[in-house]
Length: 606
Image (cartoon, rainbow, N blue to C red; front, side):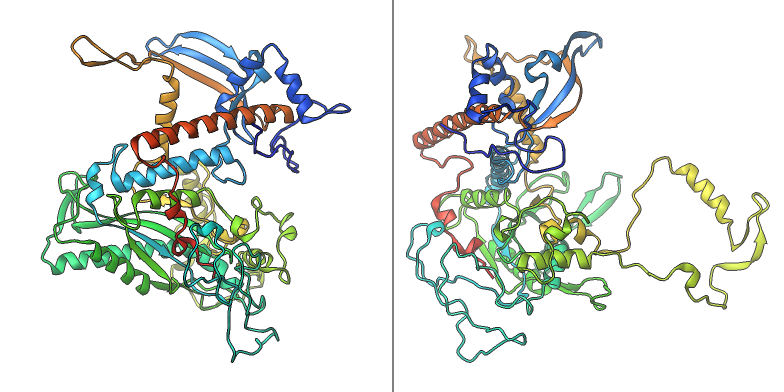
């Protein structure tokens, strides 16, 4: 079985950031197959395969060099010392851990499966979450961005296909208007084409000059704040419902020992962000309704009696239609830009018993899929842009994506006062906070401040033991940092603190399992009881490792390691399918075809 990962070194000026570093100088007739054959014929080949197993499927693993010390945990004595020079390739390989499938499919698959388990545990319990959450009202919500201009879209009113990914149903005309003429720029405002599913023009504006690219990138920038305000508005709505029904507030004790009253019902969400083909972000969210335990505020308990799924739907719909705000002033837009949700808000109940139209496995699989994607839907992929590389992607007269990147760079420019301090007009009137000129007796500074600025600065410098990042007063400065993401700088998967477990817990559990997978964990005794033979570790492994590079040494190494990892993944997938067939369940991390076929979840081309 051949590897499906890329083996071509990526063009970059940084050291070792490609798929393979090719540290060995290539000779005449050098090929990937020849390099792989040379590695496979070495006597230490099987030891090398075992050594790189932890990162074998990674596209660009990280190489670490240094020493490893085995230390007695009780006495602190060094029992054993190993250096990476004595290991294969004189380095330790570790996976890059990138979540983007276009960068590293293997690490993205691990991230996707962790995301699936994390999201599903918040719906049905497990992994430390009580199973009672399956009885809590839960809704699958989709919040879309407003329209910033007319774009090409594919609309199918009635589907007859079995799989929407390969949909070949007859679509409606894109924008069929008989009474429409030309836009102010002389372009037609209609499109009679029936676009196919993979048409490259989907999501592109009918007129690039009419489209409001500035507003879209600003909306992407403030989308996270909009979601935060929407969640707060939904919780306020639920609190009002509880007050009208006579449900008292709950008194809880904070960590500082103070007592405060909170609403008896709260929202526990988990969401992912998806960039549409037009470059606007929208959110898919799981919203679960919980109660509050006065004795244990962190416990996950059912909501008070009387709260139903309809209350949760009403709260989210009310919040989505109510929340709107304006961004801070900008030189290009003194009144700011309005930020609100689009007209299309989908709220569908989630059935955790497997009988409903939308089940927990479908939702978790669908959201986990988008957690590994980025800007691929827009056709643009790049790393963080700088002043040296922005010219390669931004163009005010270019295509749709180039104009969005240009808008990010232009709006995110420094907007401070360009007039030097010496040339600014001075107000002869005394300003509040100033006194008559006086001389500081300690340092001799002449000043009109009530406190000597020199002495105050010296005292403050003695208190500041660590440098701090200077705060910026420009709320749009982040647009330049996230220009490669078309203005969106938030996390692609976020959750409430009480919704589910964390990625760190899942990773630590996997590490602990790998560490003891060769041991017999439990054995029954004569009395039928299970005894755990794993004893507490009395030694610690302390590493002094430094970064040595990124990528495989040769293209042949990448071919061998990736192929071995692909075969291992195939065996694991076959095992999961066999177990799922035996128990009549769905393999973990795989969304059913019914979930992938729901156009209403991801089919918002405009």
